[in-house]
Image (tube, rainbow, N blue to C red; front, side, top):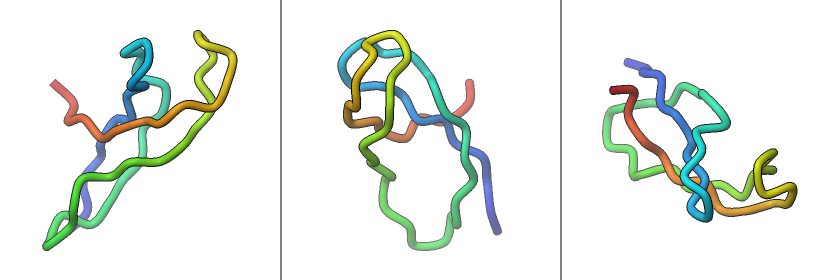
Length: 50
């Protein structure tokens, strides 16, 4: 089963990307992505849609 998650910038807290991932046995997703607000690549962590 797959579910949508948001990737939130750890520097400014902006939710910049939405992606889907496998929910069974998966760890929290953390990727280095481009933040438009910071205008540089920063680590983004997974957050659930509220």
